[in-house]
Length: 177
Ligand SMILES: Cc1cc2nc3c(=O)[nH]c(=O)nc-3n(C[C@H](O)[C@H](O)[C@H](O)COP(=O)(O)O)c2cc1C
Image 1 (tube, rainbow, N blue to C red):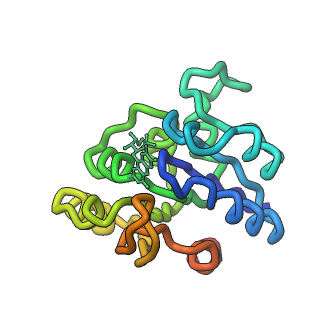
Image 2: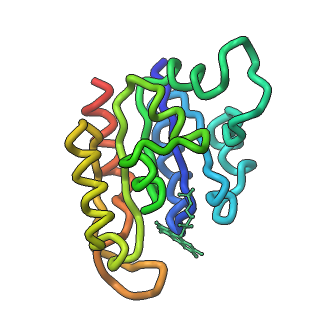
């Protein structure tokens, strides 16, 4: 069975990860969620654990189940990492080699492909620094899905709305096959 890690960050779109989990599970994939600390403001581990049937990974320093540290065990186990939704902050950290939480450490420790679905305010998305970070990550092989134009957390419409679940599913299938 293929194993997917869904990284969930502190975005208003975090709830959408639930639909992606459901689709992956329906199609026979095993799913583990890694939440950033800020993601906890938007969605609960209880929901994610109920949908995946797996414990949510969020604490870098939790005692490992075997001798391998948690971030290495997860990095080696997974076939695909999907960040859905991806905050400007996590994109910036990845682009600059910062790994101060479980999600970023797993991403740097894995050889699995990484799909990133940004979600943010239009001004944040079009900010030159965010665009530079995205370009840098694309250059080294990270695959970006979206964002699309749509309703944003502010209530305005614009670019920055997270890509829809079917788009993530199609990209995941392409990468996993
Ligand atoms: C209501 C609300 C919605 C937010 N939505 C987003 C978002 O969609 N994208 C984003 O980049 N930041 C968003 N933020 C800001 C992030 O939560 C903040 O940058 C946080 O530090 C991200 O942490 P993380 O990347 O470790 O998850 C939002 C904040 C609030 C209060």
